[in-house]
Image (cartoon, rainbow, N blue to C red; front, side):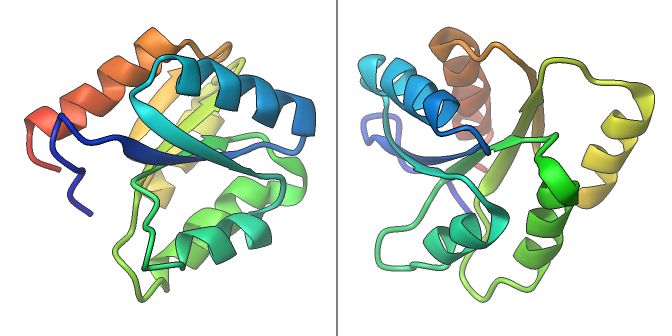
Length: 133
């Protein structure tokens, strides 16, 4: 999926099992005024939101350590998506070598470390916009 022009807001979907964390990330990123943010607590809920083509999600901020291999399940489901696939930025507090390999092999577009900051997330989004992704 191509990201919208720099003057247009991005639509982000935060996927995290903790509703407090979803709300925190949502408020942090919306305060930066460069994104419209929605949240999902489970892979199935996230996939249902991503599949809505009338109002497409541009970037998914995916908590990589979702319970029950939820992040891998969502990445696998995105392979079968009929709509354009959003960019996926995975985040966690600690990336070990195995998790890095799994994330990259599954098709994650960017890796972030928690805690998420709007400036770091914004830089990653601007990099993708700059190269026309």
